[in-house]
Image 1 (cartoon, helix red, strand yellow):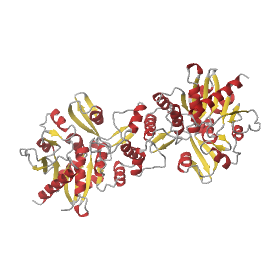
Image 2 (tube, each protein chain N blue to C red):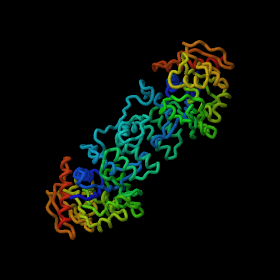
Image 3 (cartoon, one colour):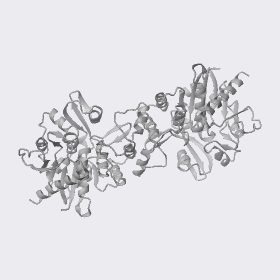
Image 4 (spheres, rainbow over the protein chains, first blue to last red):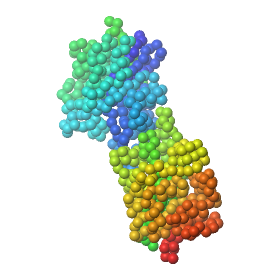
Length: 317
Length: 317
């Protein structure tokens, strides 16, 4: 089956499935892929414009990700960072020497008036990425985290404080005023839309900021194409990152079903891991089981194929 | 003899004598040192604020200079630059991984409202530099080069075009409106001023931009302290850089005497290399011979001592 596939994606975890989808759709007749990426983690650091989730997706698609560290680029070196520490510079956010090239190139292009999506398209082109990688919006949106210690900016919470403070709520400052990136909305409205995949990203700080951009959630509700989400929770734990910790601190059950309920207004299928029991029914949501843990690169491709197969099966029902 | 010494300095060549002076004046009773540095080469590149001469002076004083390449930092690596090329980024200006830390730290501090001299003082402190390193001005001044091909910005001429186009003239855009950095002017007016040293820097694009900042040249003319310049020309050639090529293209004799004549209104002594003949008399200028070629680090100290000795001898005449 051919047609256009759209993925919604946060950082490292979701980027693995985005990479799997790009491999599954790499042949000419397999259809095309747009990846709508969370930009609510973007921030300015040392005067540089840093887009952690866009970078994670680009590095995964270009097969430049570090396989051990789980973030940043493979074969990275840290000479800049060591020299910066020698100058008494801020060292809480690690910037690798090759990663820094992306930040510098993005920053001066943005400062010169290019949009985030123009810069992303340029970077993807130079990295040989054929999938369309799109920021959710070219307007600034900033995730803020209400913790027991008060409001924190996302990177302060996530990197500086290592997700330690207990969370109570989230806000996506600027989201209500933000316009969706036009190609992102257009991709969701294509007549040949085959499926929309919600990658196994953190629901609270990766997927929901994208959904908070006006027009995105309603486009997902309205599309006739299957919308299929993949669990970021396996065996009651997050595969990576603070999703499980957040669910528990918010008083939610740490389970795939709890996430399926948050997405129930726009998803058709929710994929749980094959090692977990199929959840109790959630209205309007069909559960599918698959191997969702993407340890090896092949796992990404297999999960992508399973998800596309599930979507296609639903479409022909 | 004690007292305060002021040096005027451009990049790499002059920075060697600045380092020699800082070594000669390192003991507590030896007096103190201010180095007024050319900032007319400063430019923006990839959104970063780059001050090549300030960096050369800082690296020389902190003993971080690369001894072979002649510019930048020792033990440098180029991972950022390689990655930037991979992104199709501009690669005509080389930025080493550790050098980049200085540019990033300077850029965001300037963007945050700090002056160039505040940022320089901060960087010098973190690098353990005790001499006072001062930009000639906190206001923007830009050297432009009139060549046979028209006007070029300095870095375009110097780095991108490798000084190939023949020069006809120079201008220091913004110099007439620039204020001298206050501590620089104050240093030249100190009652305990022991000597002013014009380092063996390029007269046209390193020393004369400093002299073009209102108040500097007149302070040099007016001071009662000896003003002593060191030749950047030995045996009819520049030790480094395009000084000799420029002199010849401007129709000047390529000789120490031709430079001494350009400085004759404010210098007392001009130091020629011991391998060159003492020039024909230049009104108001006394010639001294010394070993001016600074190949080894010790040569810097010996030349600094010879220059200070020459200044002190004149002061007690």
